Amino acid sequence: MSDKSSSGKKIKHPIQRDIIAGSVIFVILVCVVLSMHAYYVLTDVLTSRYEDLFEDVLMCAEHKIDTADLEECIRTRTASQKYEDLQEQFDYMVDDFDLEHLYCIIPSNTTITNVVSAVSQKGRDAGETHKAIGEIYGYFPNDELKRYSSFWKNDDVTFFEELTWDGMFYTGAIPVKNDVGRTIALICVDVSVTNISDLIMSYIRPVIFTILLLSIVFAALILFWMRRQIIVPIRGLEESVSRFADNSHRMKDIADLELSLPEIRRKNEVESLASAIDKMSSDMQAYVKDILNVEDRAESAKKEAEDMSTLAFRDSLTQVRSKAAYDIKIRELNDKIMDGTARFGFVMIDLNHLKAINDNCGHAKGDAYLIGSCRQICSAYPHSPVYRIGGDEFIVILEDDDYDRRDRCFSVLSGLFSKSRKDPNRPVWECYSAAAGMSVYQKMPGETAEEVFRRADAEMYSDKQFMKKAAATGALVDRGRELAGGRQ
Image (cartoon, rainbow, N blue to C red; front, side):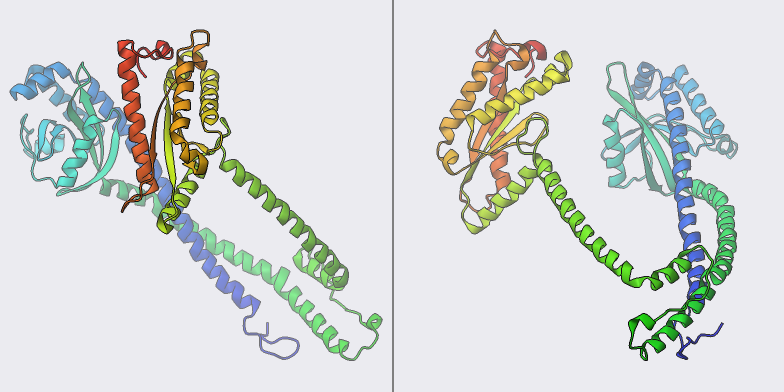
């Protein structure tokens, strides 16, 4: 097919050439994307399989340990009969599950001490022996020591990669706890990352070859189909439109302008394009109407977005302002601090006994407790914004008139909670109890809204501790402690 149009001008970017180039790019992209996807899927699958294997091995190893006997062996650095049996079990599991290492250690900030270490049959045949109880492993970087030490307090299996002198390993670790729940050692299992990568590549190579072959075949079929269905009909359509353009310069009566299009029976977009050109005027009118409809829908969507934004800044349960609104307000206060116009204070409020009410009376009563407590707060501060910043945490931001009468408002708040928490005629979920603390902005270098919040939070915590002590001695009546079991 010629690279020139019906008017004789050379076409800079023939569709056929662009389709060929696009097909090549398509084949490359499909191969790269699908190969990467297959690689990551296989990696996730194999990693998940190894993690399941690690969990089974670690749980099996943990169940085989007599913690009292192992503690005594660690203390005396002497192997008991149970220790010897455990050593044999570790060796068996290394061979049976095809693991690199299986070992039990005690990490510290400076060293890693061996407790039990397995040796595979291959290692034993090569003369490798077991490490002794209490033997110190070779040099470990400080970050590795800290990593192992951080697993000491965990309850579940932890998975991680580590680089050692022997290569890169994928490791699972779980702490061994004695009868009183104290961790006495750490069981670890390793498998070489190189082995995992080799296994992945053994799966991925035939997948890549298949993807490449199918992509080439698909691209060739697409090229043939597009030439027959699109390129040839478009060239005929282009020639007809060019003749129409030449004739339109000589026509004075628009009724005489007729567009003679080639017969296109493809039942696709090219046939639709020919029909669209023939009735361009009516389509343009419909297009303008569509533009106006789109503008109306855009305006409606904008209003809906504004409504959703309003909902995002309000807590759905208590109807006070949300954490998102609080974050924006903090930025506004810090801007006022920067320009020297700041004058505000914080009241931090933390509700007591919410968990106990949820656990003992149900979450519906817990929600009622939250709503009622929030009403107490709003009643004490009718002209100040109230924010719910946590499950049972609220904060009031004092400005203007409420800032000037902050001490009185705080006294009202304390009185409301004091009255409700000891009312014997109320159900316990209506005996609202809370600790509160207040702090105000002080014009000093380095002062920020966050610093004012921290002081209010510290005052609240101090109040909570005071309430605990007073309730414990009977100096303070708080009916919510009936559910909390004596805890705030």
